[in-house]
Image (cartoon, rainbow, N blue to C red; front, side, top):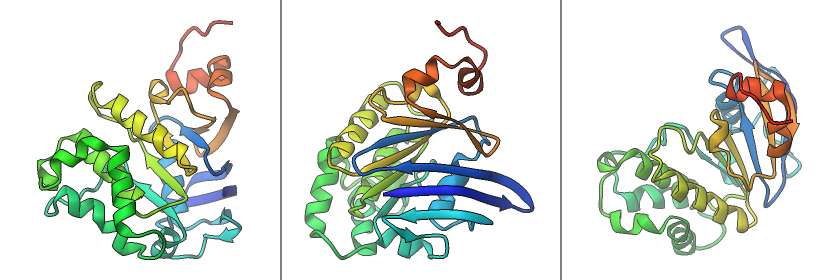
Length: 239
């Protein structure tokens, strides 16, 4: 589905991504893990066309994305929920979620896609008429993911979906992500806190200073002292 190969990206003359490679298959949950500044958001913004690669490949279902504008990337079936959620304050919850059906009008009927989003986050039904400015951080995050889902994507990019949320909200987001995965959609999550990585993740990539230093399962990461020093600080890891 998604394949990044030797991707290099500069920002204002500084190398931010230095040859990273990763892949996400349909129905797979993959997590890109790294400390703040490691290059996770730049990776996502490069996939979506906000940042242009110096070199390397970004392929989605065999199509090169590196020269496409963002709206065409979205139309090809990649949904993006940014770290800041970016819910429109002047729109209601219902309007925010419906918005993506206008962006990608082809495919399944809008009503079906909207109903599916509320199945993933049923709590949002009680806030349909509430304005985006009146939502809590957790509610905005659910709206942001639901809005990306109504695009009817084959792949979802979720940037820090658990960051800054209350402990009561995190399980609701995690349950929603799990249900999205069962729909056969690929999901790529960026996460800085190793303790927020869902235990049902298929594979993780650890990013450090713009390079992938580890690829494997979450269990394997916990058993690698060097990896854990990077993503969780200096801790004792059971042998």
